[in-house]
Amino acid sequence: MNRMFRLPLPAMIAVLAVMVVLSTDVSSGLEQTAAPDFTLKSTDGKNIRLSEYRGDVVLINFWASWCGPCLQEMPILSDLHKRYQSLGFTVLGVNVEENSSDARRLLGKMPVSFPVLLDNTSAVSKQYDVVAMPSTVIVDRNGNMRYLHKGYKPGLEDVYLQQVRELIRE
Image (cartoon, rainbow, N blue to C red; front, side):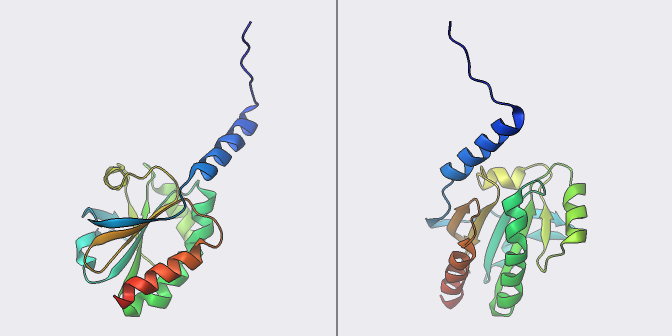
């Protein structure tokens, strides 16, 4: 008789989380493909359109309040935004949750220096083929996607820094 091996739910979740991390492509360069334009409402009620940032380097970070690595990198992205904003760089955080109340509550406890946009319908996430949390796309001044990072591991901020500096200098 073929018996299926069963794990308790917490163990299964831990195994799945490890599988996601191990299968995650942490960083990859992209062919210069135009970043899909989008308009999303920010947490302060403003409509923000990606194309309004043409001429700037933009780091788009897709995140969720339930994602531990997302929360780990948010203060790092906030610092990066503050440090390079005057040189034509911005971070756009895109929360992917259907109900934004958890994200708003989290931002009340951990404010960030960059705009946070709400993708409640996952329309923009689908445009960018987001399959891992967090996912980060870095867009050059011409509106082309140049780098993609799926997932987050400590130390990745050094890669972000190098890539952002490179694109700011172009």
